[in-house]
Image 1 (cartoon, protein in one colour):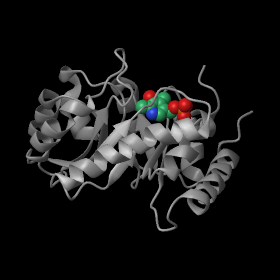
Image 2: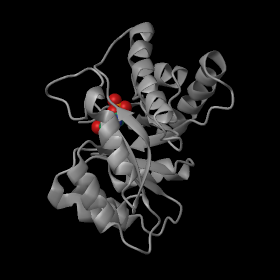
Image 3: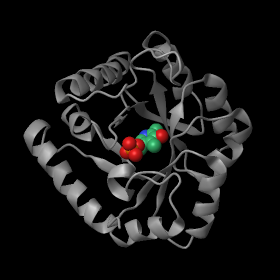
Length: 229
Ligand SMILES: *Cc1c(COP(=O)(O)O)cnc(C)c1O
């Protein structure tokens, strides 16, 4: 049986080691538990072990869990899956962060539909860092203009970038790719988007490399909850 609390403890040790070995000690690295396909009971085990940030990919599944866990006051919900335009209203109303914005039209809808009683919705632009034709995400060539336009939207708070690199086994190759994501963020900062402070990158198989290259959110599913069935 999977021991979620023990897995979380182990991951936190690995995060501290990665920060000590590679990154500046002051780097803020927040762990998002990717809970797609997991039950409320599994999420509750993670909560009991101190986990607060959760990432979901599928809206209907996520809404059901958010409702069932509404009594847990301090949870932070991250939407990390592909976004269809007919889903933006419920995403804008139920999540704290959206990591998978790659089109202006989606961003405009999220901004229009963010409820006035909530603070602006935190946004990461998803970039297609390996230029894979089947993957979502904006290309590096189109990133700056999209970021400038999203940054103007009143009910959104553009925070940074998200990427899902092509799987690589070697740490060096993993790091090369994450370094390109970080460079993309730095180029936006140099272009005047000074407030951007977020790099959402790193999953169960490559999060150490992502931390080494400055990740501020890592998104882990399998390492916490076991293999998805
Ligand atoms: C599923 C998923 C993850 C987690 O992947 P693991 O390999 O299980 O850690 C992270 N990010 C996104 C966008 C995902 O869809």
